[in-house]
Amino acid sequence: MVTVRILQLTDLHVFQDPEACLKGIPTRELLADVVRHICESGQTFEHVVVTGDHTHDEMPESYQAVRQILSPWLDRLWQVPGNHDDRAGLRSVFGDRVSGVGQDRITFSFSAGQWLCLGVDTHVPGAVPGKIEAAQIDWIRQQIQSINPARIALFMHHPPVDIGSLWMDRIGLSGKELLHELFNSERRIELVCCGHVHHEFWSQVGNAKIYTTPATGLQFSPTGSQPTFVAEPPGYRVIELTDDGFSTNVCRLPVTRFSPST
Ligand SMILES: [Fe+2]
Image 1 (spheres, rainbow, N blue to C red):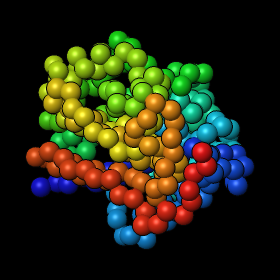
Image 2: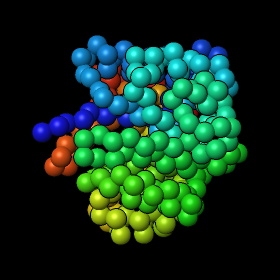
Image 3: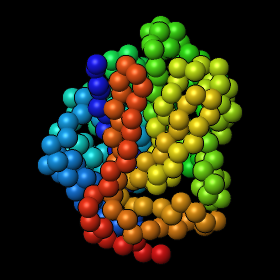
């Protein structure tokens, strides 16, 4: 049986200034820690997906730094933008890995064994919440129709469900009911991997299991009505796709090197 291993990284929040911190967390240094940890662990992946917030400041130098740190996987890298991204800026640095031009939506589509993996762009320029529109649902349906896979995985920045955190749900995804209709009618969509919330969470709509993944840098508390940050090590998600289904788990680095400021 074919097993395809996918690495998901999310919410890198790298700054132009190599020393800059997000709430006391040196995001560039921790992203490098994550990549080093994975490479030294001996784990191998056929695909690496970054689900947005590559940078915090949307500066070209920040995207260049991300590209340099992710250099072990440039030949297998897939990306969607988050709210802390600029599509044109991301394209200017990852033009060999991202199709389209300027502010066109950044999507991807690749097959993995019997699975079809689709990247869905929820970015709204200048806004923190994300958005899904009917045209994006049409695109997903067209991809499914043309390839006719046995199973489908989606990757996106904003999760298509509320997560029970009041402040985070206020900056969630509008139009998510369109995705719920899709999940309820297209049972082959079995897996949805997201970022944005900087911690691990899961839910289900229709046949789709929806997972969020810890950030490579700053970790958020999963509860509370106001933003609260927690001292936990960086994390990433490992996904294994097989003919029979999938398995997935979050891995965290063994050490918490930095505590966030309040
Ligand atoms: Fe983020």
